[in-house]
Image (cartoon, rainbow over all chains, first blue to last red; front, side):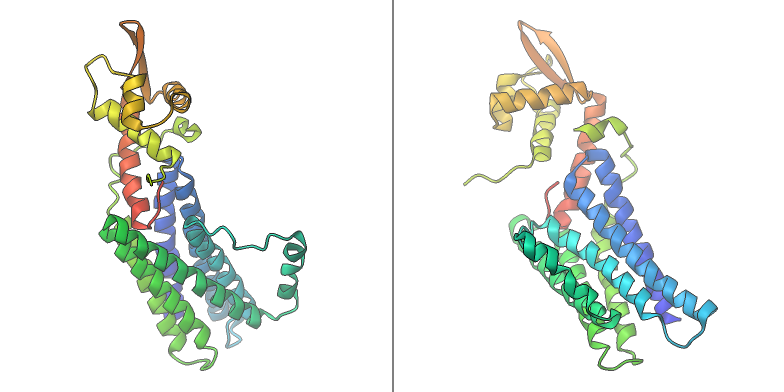
Length: 212
Length: 95
């Protein structure tokens, strides 16, 4: 039940930040805001997929354990979101440049089970989030923008939540997973604090501005 | 070394100049905008053409030279730009 609520909160908070980013993109045509829109919509959809898995289990399947495939799919979608946050900070060498390595790079994903995939994507998420948190706190050193502290804290909490989520495999069925989820939601709320201060009342849509 | 400015930041600087820092009520000349926005003539010409075509700037012929003033749409765009520039700053990013 707790997981249901936490995943639903994650979905809603991610969606709210995604919508805010999208409004910004529609008004300014900024590619940065477009990347943030994809990032937060992905994070939100990831939470939604995991929440759907829990709901299916609780009310339809009732097998006693959540489908790991759905859980892994949700985590992969969230990882895409974390990638776009890190990508906005100019990760230029994330993928190998060689076409050969690009073509075989995806091969290991077909050779591992969904449980192992979950491990892999949680660790990728952790690295991307730590990178994003460090870049954001470095930007605070330049502009002394207090909102950046809140965002860096949010990304840091999301990273810690991912780490605990991964570590919960050592102690399955323990409270560790719920703690991980709570920390991730706290991270999303910390991200939402500066976003909530954007004055939307005076901003209106204008389709013509997209072409700039 | 100078700070890197995105295309969006340059547009914001041009619109801010035409709103807050006009030479006179007739608007700003290209030369004045080049000095204030600190970019080349060829680049600012392209940007000004786009901004006029999008209705963000109004172009007027005064004393034999083109002058530029911000439009109402331009003011609204600039307001959105400042709001979301702060939003991106919070994420340590530039829009």
